[in-house]
Length: 160
Image (cartoon, rainbow, N blue to C red):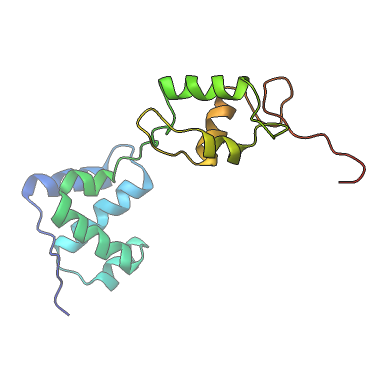
């Protein structure tokens, strides 16, 4: 089978990878990637590389593809993992808090998350899910289950 993505390392890249394997403190993932890249550069099959590195064959294929498409650094270090930005921020968050702390909706005993998500629209006119509202209220300690903030659980009656 002909490999679609071939790993061809420069002399400097090979030295960097050998340095990772031979010295210094590096994580297990980085060491495995370094070893797999060196073996791929030596034209070993994915099955042989997988056996020597204790990686899955599909992981080796992805590593070779990432090397060709995204480069040496990203392949070796892995993709940066960042946190997602909050959906409701700044002025929208302040408006949501004011809504929750304000008057209850007509015909309702309390604010629910779904009712808030149906009522609340951000400044750029986008609808927000009830989960985004829950996370924002949790961050500000305005939980629907907490009394005294306009959003609370209905008291259970003996019939319910």
